[in-house]
Image (cartoon, rainbow, N blue to C red; front, top):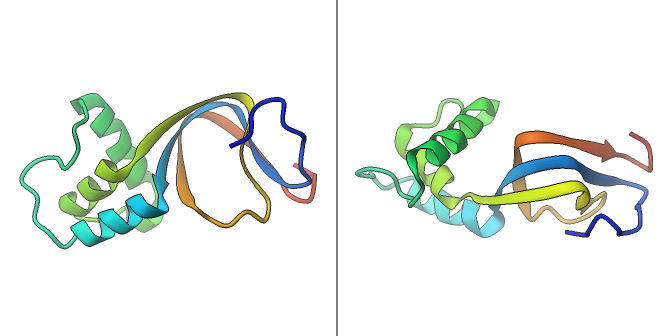
Length: 116
């Protein structure tokens, strides 16, 4: 992730000052493996408010709406939190997908071929 001073590429996903929750490729793989297990309680060591925030983020995404509690718990447990200042580059157009981002608060600007 480039800093605020990084050169502007022709296509980029730039922070306008936001907090993202990141689910990396490794985290997704781990969560998917664990989804077939039954959980007794949360699979992650988060305080209840952070856990709830992340669970709500997951449930707002249409493809994740119908996940079971255990499946949602697996995704929440695999998430990492990122806080980015305005202007920070999150990724560039053409980069290989390494993570799935959920925008927890703030906003982003998406450039495609140098245009918003």
